[in-house]
Amino acid sequence: MLASLQGLWATFTNGLKKPVTAQYPKQHLPVNKRYMGFPVLMWDAPVGEPYCTGCMVCVRNCPTGCMSAQMVDNPLFKEGKSKRRKIIENFEINYGRCILCGICVEVCNFDAIEMSHQHELSVVARNGNRANLPRLLEMGKAYQAEVDWKPKSAEEGAKQEATA
Ligand code: SF4
Ligand code: SF4
Image (cartoon, rainbow, N blue to C red):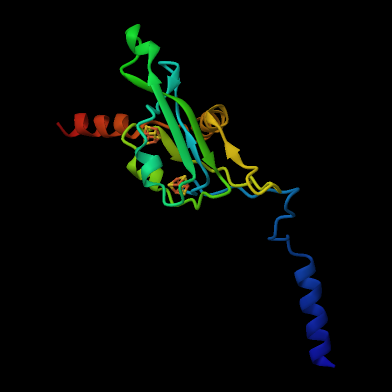
């Protein structure tokens, strides 16, 4: 009898507690700042072009071979408006094959790619999640605004100036 009452009391008190589970997909919990979602490309707003030069380093190092890129001569360099001789023309990541390892970000020398907070990209088609350059930059701009992103080279330069 006592055990039954204790059980009822436990049910009653727990029923009054605020639920800790999110009702996905109606409710989305915020991700941690350091969360590594899908990689996206960064936009150099002051110059008006992507950071990516199409150097192919990330493409060669991607363990799943899910990236491709092509570079062109940068017209803004010829006009003296950019320091990048080459610029990305086409870039694609097949998110269906990306394992979120972050190697592309580690090897990039141009601050051009970051692991975003984007993680809800499921599609039904087997190869239906190929992100092209405009989509990668669109997601990159959203990520930059979300985290107030600054290029690592600028941060390192500021640290060196402070210690000099
Ligand atoms: S993201 Fe970085 S490593 Fe990859 S092609 Fe662009 S500049 Fe090169
Ligand atoms: S996170 Fe890893 S698997 Fe995904 S694109 Fe970058 S290097 Fe390739």
